Image (cartoon, rainbow, N blue to C red; front, side):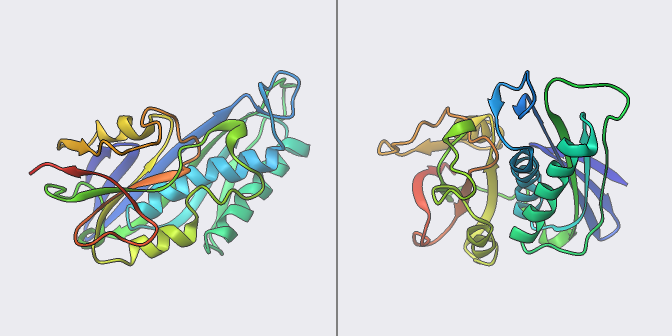
Amino acid sequence: MIRERVRDLTLIEMDEKILVIAVDSCGGVGQKEMDELKVDPYFVGRLTARVCIMEVLSAGAKVLTIINGVTNEFDTTGEKIFKGITDELIEANIDKIPVNGSSEENFKTVNTGVVITVIGVVEKENIKVSKDLSGLKVGLVGLPKVGSEIKLPYDPDIISYKDLYTLLTNDNVIEIIPIGSKGIIGELKQINCEVELSKNVKMDIHKSAGPATCVLVFYCGKLIDGVTEIGDVRR
């Protein structure tokens, strides 16, 4: 059994398959007295789950299960978070998978917190991680947004699951990297090659993209519909 950490993913090789594991946490966002950003816990569940689902799907994997740890009471905070998670799975066209978790029933809490783990599986030959990116073009789908900038319940500026599935079925797309709190530049620093960004890039490349509101797309050939070209990978 071979274990490997790639960016925010843990990969566990098992014979001809690879388990793909993604984890994300959220704290201080909710409707409790000490939460800094007041948001319905339902959306906390949806958007935190979104990060992990995007990561696992982008690796070419099929989601097997979701595990959530809520640091609050189930009634009503945990229940709303759980509902958000299950609705996010529906949005991603993923259903009939086990969703397990735990909540805090012993102590009163004053701010909202949740940790979500998504586990997926992919055939070794089909994984879209750590590919040779030399000479490819770099594009962006969606815009970096975080916190209150995200329009709820739906933001047309951020990448959708429909967009992601379209990219995953395009033979010219070699790898997809969701952007999180590290921003575009932070994610680019984690790949093993040098990227030359276009001088015409207008978005803030250092800005957090929060719950994976955009993705980097490494592709060959002509510009793909819906993708904004932002640079090239040097050979």
